[in-house]
Image 1 (cartoon, helix red, strand yellow):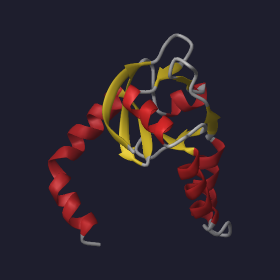
Image 2 (cartoon, one colour; image 1 turned 135 degrees about the vertical axis):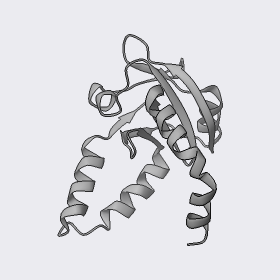
Image 3 (spheres, one colour; image 1 turned 120 degrees about the horizontal axis):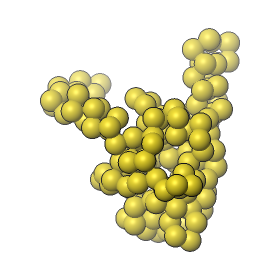
Length: 145
């Protein structure tokens, strides 16, 4: 549903414009609610509601008796916000999530199939540069499992 990467800027009020292609995909799949939370590798995850509910159900299966499971769920869900896209295609990123992802103004929005990721531009560039050389090696390990 979400593919590609797009550079955008956060406005003075902390709003982010969702790329037109992603807004179209949301419309085509009749998505009204989105959930924004702390992601992995220093980015934010932005889920359509149905994908959020799927992830929520998977994470509820993690036993709360395991310390790592409790820690992950606390961090993942405590940072979550239900966000709406306004008529101009913008959504508000809460201050705590901007701080988590080190977002100041310039961002890269990355489509990762069923979710979007929001990265501070510098963070995305560092991640990409550090990962692109090993793309084939990673593919071999991940796809053979």
